[in-house]
Length: 261
Picture 1 (cartoon, rainbow, N blue to C red):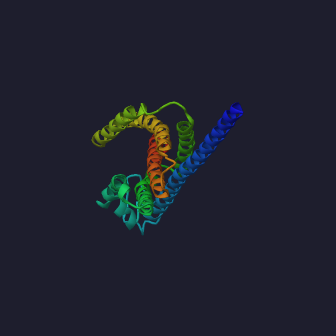
Picture 2 (picture 1 turned 90 degrees about the vertical axis):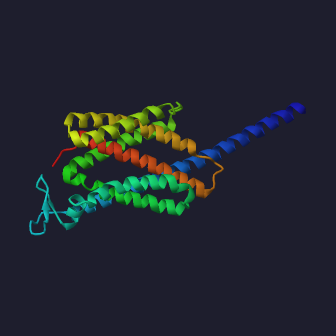
């Protein structure tokens, strides 16, 4: 009789553990789906706004043009404001300011405010990235985007499914990121094509690693006991990290494989 009771208790405990694991896995999948949905929608906002801005900023009618770039692209009044006036620095730096603002203030924000801030950031990135349509052909931009999407998907899947602890990559990748930033600033003055090529190659490797690393870190941030408010803010911040990885990987690949106008 006592043996029967012990076996029954063991079976009940195992069934309970399996049920808890099932609930945890379901919650984790919902959490990660929220991260990817936020990220995908943010990319959609950026892409649509970048394309629309480039369309309204350029013209084929010389009568409507107020300025002409070195490659012959004619700018409308909007294009001149965005790419030829001091406003271009605001357009370039505003997304970076938004990243810092969201990162430091997200804990004191409501989830809805954090979400609106993320959409605003994605929109500003669209304005900032619209300039790539003045430099690269539309076909090469589309091709590199799909290459980036396939690479990002594979790397993120690896980061999500691997049993290997990627936390040791963090310091190495961070040092690589700092090196890219410093080298890019130096190259603003040197304008060296060889240095730019090296930055792009190293950048691809760094942001590829960051995609897998960040995915695993975001997964580990999930806690089944979080409230819906906390979970939503974690999803938004996770989406921001993966969004930045995707955008930077895309830009590095575009510099390597994009066809210039």
